[in-house]
Image (cartoon, rainbow, N blue to C red; front, side):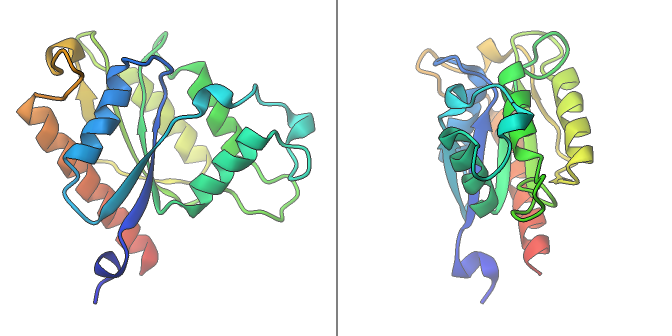
Length: 195
């Protein structure tokens, strides 16, 4: 019996946008709907509660509760699925801030939540280049954290307003196919990490 058959992989999905109607959050909802199987995907909805990173508070005893909870959920997840918008050719500050809180272990007692964590990246934007630059910036962060990032397929949903219906459902067949390929590639990374 394979690890996948024994227990579905736990995927924590994080949108870098706080907007209720964000196409990036809708992409994560599409991942739930079009999940090719073997994964239990949970969308993280508390990004707004993460306070600005403060090194003086970055210890197990002093971290804000929302940060402690996010770190726990990332550590318990088998993999992450991160959808990022593009702001000023980079990732949104709220997403970078959360990753800063996830990248440390100053006491060397807890482990690093992002270290060798399988991660898949995607993004949506109404612009013609999608989130190419934001995803590049995000991938550079994961070089530092030594995360295991899916290389292909790259899912850059450009002109995203044309790919969702009025209710926020992903309708573009090519994007759906790429999303499923991305989830399958993430699953392969998770299975390799279990071996």
